[in-house]
Image (cartoon, rainbow, N blue to C red; front, side, top):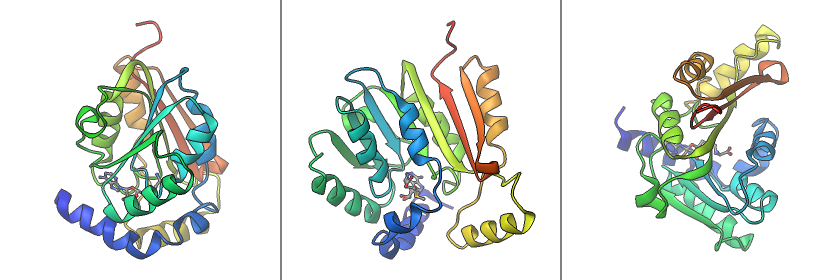
Length: 219
Ligand SMILES: C[S@@+](CC[C@H](N)C(=O)[O-])C[C@H]1O[C@@H](n2cnc3c(N)ncnc32)[C@H](O)[C@@H]1O
C-alpha cells in the first residue's frame, strides 16, 4: 500500500470515529496512562507523540509534566482536526504543537523546528502502521543522546482465554489493526545494537510495553 493510500485509509476510518474515539477507547486502549507516567522527561524537556490521534495522550502528558514542551504528529488530517480542537479547549496551544506527518518518514526539524526530543512515544499505533519497524526506527532516530522511546500496543493475549484473543483480533482486523507479534524480537535487536531496552507484558498480555533508549547507559 502506498503512503497516500494508507493516509486516505486512516482518514476514512477516523472521519466518523474521531467524534467518539476518546469516550470508547478509554475502555480498551490499556496502558496509555502507565506509559505517560513513565515518560519522566528532564526539567524543561521535550516530548513527541508519534501518531497522536485526538491528542488525548499529549494533553495528559502536558498536565503531568507542566514544564515540558510537547509535539504531536499524525498522518490523518481528520484526527488532527480533533487534536487541534482538544488542545485549544485545554488551553495548551502554547505548549503543544501538532503537525501532519508520517511516522515512518519524518524530520522533527522540518515539522517542529527541533533537531531531537528527550522522550518520544508511540501509543496504539504500531498495530496500524504497515511499516511499524520503520516508525520505531524514526522514533529512536529523533531522540537526544539521553532520550527514550516508549511504546504500548496490543499484545498477544498470552494469558487470556484463546477465544478472547480470537474475537479481539477479528474485531481489530475490521479496523486494519494487527498486534505485532515480532515486537520482542525487534526490541532485542536494539538491545544487541547496544541500546538500553525494556519489554513488559501487561494485563495478561493484553498489552505490550517496550522502551528503547537512544543508546546504552554505559555508552
Ligand atoms: C488507534 S489510534 C492511536 C491514537 C493515540 N496514539 C492514542 O493512543 O489514542 C492510531 C493513530 O495512528 C495514526 N497513524 C496510522 N498510521 C500512521 C502513520 N504512518 N504515521 C502517522 N500516524 C499514523 C492514525 O491516524 C491514528 O490517529
